[in-house]
Length: 322
Length: 133
Image 1 (cartoon, rainbow over the protein chains, first blue to last red):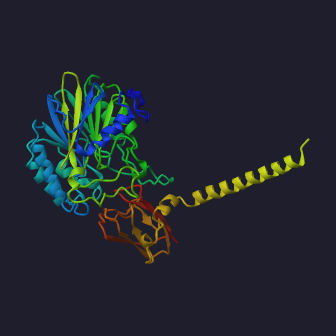
Image 2: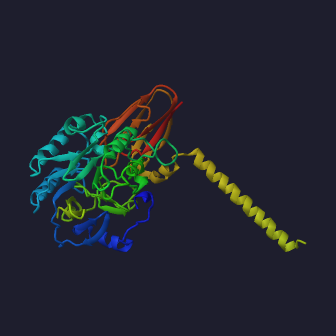
Image 3: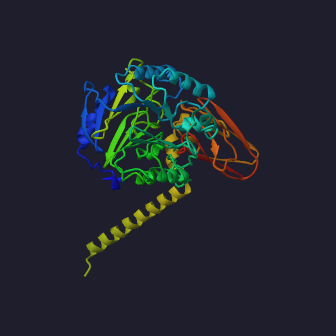
């Protein structure tokens, strides 16, 4: 149920056990089919790609400029990701990059990403920033290069073939916080101005409009100890709860995690640069370094999302670069 | 009627309760006095603690020591020993290091007394403070 957004219990047909089983297939590519807000099937690598009205690809965390273990060349793996998009049997209508385009927000890193994306067959790329894109200058360089067509502090919405897409920014003005009473939460935050805009943005929409929300830091609390969550995401989701189908696409954590709560499917994408540990599985969220070179590409990848208009399923296929 | 045995049990009970209270108080006192205790335990390894005076080492997504006390006029240096980039951003925007990639350093001279809290703009759960006397 949408009004159970804060409830940890998965309220759908998919049992925890089958969910875990699906997650184990993550490295080989997972197909998620969402039908009217409920995950109805989950199959393997060889599942046929659903024929949809249109599809789009989510790419994330390209970290252009990253050159340490386990990936000495993040530019190369990002280029490979674009080649993989160009080889898809059904060409996506557009791309969504969910942030951390660059590793250190330098103009050179942003320009390298732009150059590589020029070779992608889809012309249109929608961006939201990650904290790595805005941390040196409050996003000035990022907005100059990628902020075109956005509102406020980089947020945006657009409609494509009956689906309403909303790009949110939750990496600006991050407040310090250690969970020990000093300052804030250390989580991502949307801020009151953006929340106000979001409420107005969806006001006139019919509740049957499928909604896709994309933002860098997960809009669900995955692991606050590592800052993997957004402080005021519940407020944002409360404006969306009347809609029948909501898909939330995030990056930031460099691994696939998925959760379904009522009509909301939360999904995080792999990075095209380097994998990060499972929540709490390491002393810090730094890159998993001890990945053999021949295994690296099985931990990097992108997400292909297909939308079928008639019965409203959104199918998510996560593929690796291997 | 309370037997001698029951009395002993009662005394033992009262003593354990008192002990629990003392431990409880001591613990809550320690927590109040050291707001960064969770962070300190994470980095309390010999190799991550700086041996250079007035230097703060960034290791495993933590500042060590998390609290540094110095005299006014002291130059404090942060050095990043992580593979990830970090920053030192003062909470009230008094100073901002910019990007500190691996082995990157940043220094700031504290001229006036006070407590100066700071955090990493990329990983805002990383916090520390400089107490200037």
